[in-house]
Image (tube, rainbow, N blue to C red; front, side, top):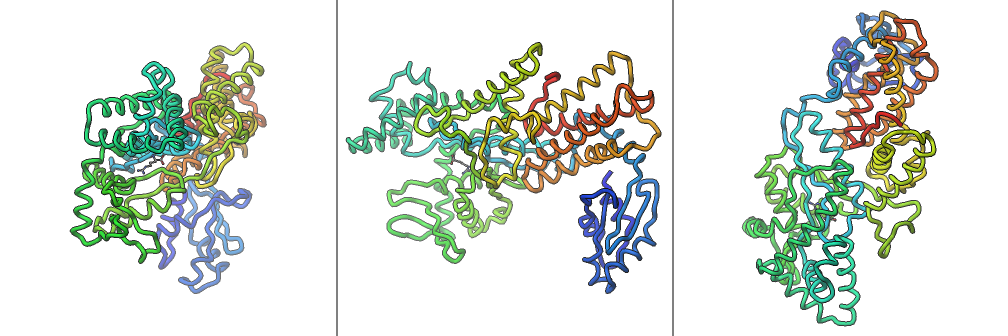
Length: 563
Ligand code: ARG
């Protein structure tokens, strides 16, 4: 039930659209006054009356019914009380009917959303800096699919550039098959670091590297085979992490995929008179838009990151005909996205307006020193392992006889890392703390998971005793009502998260529902209540578990049966 819309449909205000009214209806922080409130200040101009008068007038006109049972006018606000029995019935029926689809919808109508996320660099560490793009992108991917869109997950691999020539040079000089096969990314990264160290003494190594890169570009057998092998090894390592985080992609078309798709872009720019020469390089001047120029070709004729991104955007539009193409990339790249979006717009691509840079802040570790094997690179895999290990220790201490402790620890540990990255508004820089992320009483995934386990335990005891769950005719008590109202808000929350590209809305929602459930659990007897009340409370408990499972699932977090 969409109460805001329901109210708006019945509340006719001259000169104000239903849409506008629905948007103005808010949930007041203090539910004493009402469950919804409409501030009348913004109608004062159109209606030429004081907000107080408007509220009174609207109150006298509003048709109270079995859904909204009470309307009052207070100081320029119109307050609505919903019929609690009706709300309970609606919310619980809907959740029982829709179950694992509760919160889902078909609003997307199969429209395509391209999502560029994680986008790792070949032979480079998959480090803590990739956490946000990976889990934000993964969550948005699930959210859009849940809302009936067709999400296309794209890992725009960083697999192009002179660094691969350096890597081949280093491998040939100091590497060997066994070392690299066993060491994976870490071994490749060490070779790369060594190349830089040695090149300081021997600058001629740089020429060698350039020559090797040229051979990759020209499709030379041996160099290309080595490069493909590095790519394979990198993906093998990264996939282990993706699997634990529940991350999927539909395409791994990386930068090198666009090698033969850039010339047409350059030609088009030239033909449209957008290309200029500047100190030998080919650029698009963006001064009129307050930006530095977008460099398309370097003076040696080689392409740039932006050139490849432009070719990629055009390719994606042609291939997927996207409604929107989202780039989940750190805010450090703000300028890059603004530049190439602008250039595409100047080329007359009307769809350039559908390209969105979903920027996010930095993640650092509270204990930065820990787990650094090489320099100050912190591998994401190490962070996850560490968190799972800590989770195991805590679980083992709290509940030594628990079965499947390792499985539970994996869900709790991975959940803590994911939730830690998703809990705050994405643009904020965050400092990840293992202890905070694993606090059973904090605003954490483990708190939510524990709440689920608590609900599941009540339900399994009820099942063992043969109790059933069903609606009853009684008016919900305040604790039940607060929880039910929150549960009813889930579909709205998912929609809002998609609109704002903010999985944090869902993370916060999980904590809110868990808190309300725990208040209900502690204040109200469930199993010990009278028959009717018990059945009703069991139904609420079941609905809570369903909703939290769905919500955590969208974030990529599993729910252990027992904890
Ligand atoms: N590989 C890049 C990096 O690590 C991110 C790529 C983001 N996607 C894009 N289409 N530019 O910085």
